[in-house]
Length: 168
Image: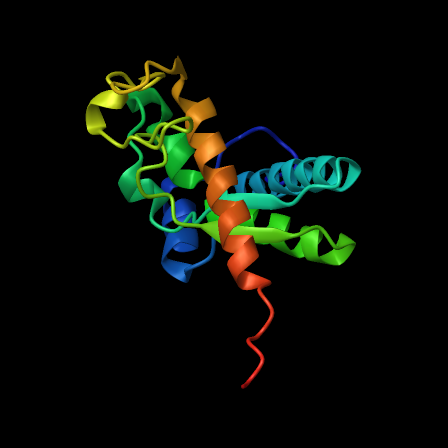
C-alpha cells in the first residue's frame, strides 16, 4: 500500500530517484504548478494588451537570478521560478493574437528618471523608492522602471518596423 498511504519513501528510494536523473514527484508537482501559474499570468498580460490595443515590452529575462537579490526566506522560491518560461509564454501568446511584443535591455531602467532622463545610482537610494536628484520626481521604483521599459519598447519597436530605405 505504498502508493496510497501517507508514509514517505525510504532514504534509499529517494537516492535511487536522484541517481536515475529523474525529478522527484515533488519537483515535478512544483514544476507543473509554476508552468500553470506562468500560463495564467501570460494569458492575463496578453488579454489586457489586446483589449487596450497596446504592445508588450519586457526586460530580457536572461541572468535575472544573478542580477536580483531577494531576502533569504524568498531565495528558494525565486531560484525555482522559470522566468524564461514566462517570457516565452507571453511571446508566443502575443504572436498568436497579433499583439506587438519586444524584449528590451534592462540596463539602468530602475536608476533612470522617466521624466528628465537623468541616470544616477543615487536616484534609487532604497530598493522600493525612487527620487530623481535632478528634477525631484519621486515614487515607487518599479513604476519608474516600468515607464522606462515602456519607452525603450516603443523606441525599439519603431526601429524594428522602420521601412527599408529606398535605393537611390
